[in-house]
Structures are given as structure tokens and as C-alpha cells.
Amino acid sequence: MMDFLWNLASFVIALGILVTVHEYGHFWVARKNGVKVERFSVGFGRALWRKTGKDGTEYVLAMIPLGGYVKMLDERIDDVKPEDKDKTFNSKTVYQRIAIVAAGPLANFIFALFALYIMFLIGVPSVKPMIGNISPSSIAAEANLTKDSEIVSIAGDKTRNWQEVNLALIGQIGNQEITIKTKNSDSQYISSFTLDTSNWEFSPDRTSALTSLGISPYRPKVHNELAAVAEKSPAELGGLLVGDKLIAVNDVLTDDWVAFAKEIKQYPGKEVSITIKRNDEILTPLVIPNSIEQAGKVIGYIGVAPKVDAWPKSLLVELSYGPIDSLQESAQRTWNLTSLTFSMIGKLITGDVSVKNLSGPIGIAQGAGNSASHGFVYFLGFLALISINLGIINLLPLPVLDGGHLLYYLIELFTGKEVPEKTQEAGFKFGALALLMLMAIGLFNDFSRVLG
Image (cartoon, rainbow, N blue to C red; front, side):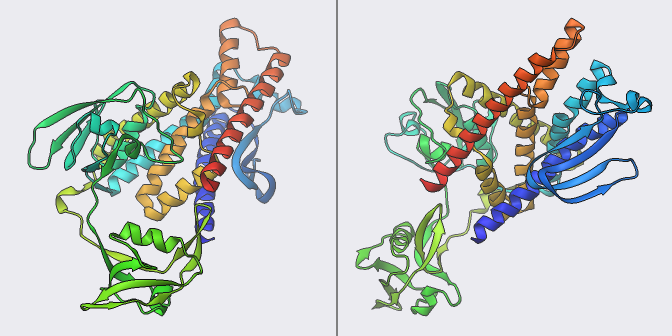
């Protein structure tokens, strides 16, 4: 329940910021071009808060935080007083209307640049992408990729941490091969490997891009020994102590922490016997795991954490830059994310990427919650990614979106005539239907991942 509330709060905050930024772009340029703005709304539906400013604009915070709008004075919709005719949207030149409509997506790109700039100024704690293991018979194994080597680039894109590795791999979905360059920790020699990805099957609802290729990141060794026991937890009530070495659950041997956790999860609310070694003595305390919900399933939980070795200092790095370099880094990251998004849209259209990769509001909410729980800088990175996606989606040539309006204005610019109202109405209906279909697919994928 707490995870749900955290994800919901993070989602509302993230979407509220991005919608406000987008709509403010329209608002600011409209006002600069002499258009009267009647309402600036963040959200749809019933108004939770409203205030009329000295500029005559009504500012509204509405109940449903899935978008927003700027209502401008328009003779085609409103009864306009003669003295206000020059303040209507439709009275402006086609260039002014293009500027007003394009300002929303442009504001999203500017915000992404700003968020990433702040992120790089603060510094992003990262881990070098050192390969921990290669699965036998996997795509990576067939390319002779080796463990204990650092991934330095993918398809020519520099990779300084695992986030950049994942972004680079996702951008290669649908390609027939991927070139990965690595180096060993004790050498500066760069090795190049070509992965045959013609039969690469990547399903984000089941696995990560890395795992699907057979690559496992290096992680410090996790010992089958307790390093922490939560106060008043089932483990404490059952008599488990820090330092206990774990041997078995219900007489099923658990050779490592993963096996132990897997066994405990199978017994929510049911008494289990846990075989431990404490000071050369074998004990078998009885514990009743609590029941918690995780990814739509009820699992057992006893409130313990294992002993884990520290990360090698040589693998820890902080991506932090000065004011000038941060601007360059943020501009490069904005460009990379924009290129990646356009590439993925193109591959969706051509069928190289399955529609199963689409996410809806639930997926976005989970992403917002996860990034926020990791810290402010990660939340900034998430905001930048979604802001770029929001800007690009709004530029798609669907008549119900900004891109559709821009398409109509470009036609008007070249023909010298407005697109007929009947054609516009038909386009809006088609655009609304297409958008609803995309949202439905995203929601279906969300529910499949949560319930599956």
C-alpha cells in the first residue's frame, strides 16, 4: 500500500510539473503575441483550486492530473467583443499560430535540458559497467564477450555507467547486430565484439535488455549471513540474530541468499523452520513470515538483510561537472534521449519493436516512484526523460495533438488557405481514436506487467 501511495504521489508531482511546463510554453508565447488567454488549467475535470489573476486569466488546478490546457480567445468558438477581435488566436498570422502551438513541446525540451543540467551540476553517483557474468549459450557468450571486463561503448556511444549501457542497448532494438567495446580492469587495451542480434528476443515486462543478451552486471558478493534484523519483525520474534549463517528453510538447503529469499517468499503467513549456524551451534528457530504484496503477488517477508561486501572503490564514479561542462553534458544527453525516442517510434511503426514495449500511466507512475526513492538527482533524470517523450509525442502529426495543429498550419502556409473545417473535424476524430488506442495498449501492457 505504501508503495502504491509513493508511486501515486511521485506520478502526480512529476506529471504536474511537466504539464505546467508544457502549457506555460503555449501561455507565454500566446501572451507575447497579443492573444488573450482566458484559462490556464493544470489537470482536467472538476476544479480543486481556481484564481483569476490581474491579467484576466483564470488559473485552475483540476482533479485529473493527466494533462492540461490553455484556453485562448477564439472567434470560431467564442462570442468576441469588437474591441477584443485583435486579441483572438484565429486573428493572428499563421507564423504566430505556429509559434504558439510549437511553444509547448519546445518548453518540454528546454525543461529537460535544465533538469539534466542541474543533475550533472549536483553529480550522479554511478557504478562503472563491469560485467559480472555471461550466461552460457547466450547471444553475449556466442560473441565471446568475457566477464570481469568494463563496457566502454555500444554502437559507438560512450557508456560510463549501467544507465548509459541500458539506453544504448534499447536504442539498438531491431538492429541485426550490435558492436560492444570493452576493456579489462588491469589494461587499457580495447576489445571489440559484434553481437548477432537478428534473433534477439527482448520483452521488457519479463527481463532487462542486458539479461536478454546474457550479460549480468558485477555485484559485490552477498553472503548467506544476516547483517540486519528489523525490530519487531518476524525474524526478531522468531529469535534470529545478526551474524546467523543461513543453512535451510523447512529442510530445503539454501546455498545462497537468493535461494533463501525464494524459499521464504513461498510461505506468507505460514510457520517455517529456519536452520542456522550460530557460534558453531546448529539451531532451528520457527518463524512466521508476514504477508506483503509485491508485483501483484502475496509473498512471505521476515525482515532481514544479508551481509554484502563493499563495492570496490575502483568501480565507483560520480558524474559531476562544472557549470560549462554540465551544459555540454546535458545538451548531449538531451540529444541522445531525443534521438532514442524518435528511433523507437520509427521502429514501432515499422514493426521492429513490439507494441508490448509501450507503457501507460501505471508504468510511468512506477518509474516516477522508483526514481524518486533513489534520490533527487535520479528523479531529475526521470523528469527529463518523460519531458522529452511528452514533447515528442505532442509533435506527432495527429490532429488532436500539437503536431496535428502544426500540420494544418503548414498546409495553410504553403497553400495560402486554411484547411476546411470538415477536414479538420474528421482529422480530430481520427487523432482522438488513434490516441485512445495507444493509451489502451499502454494500459493493457501496464496491467499485464503488474498482474502477470
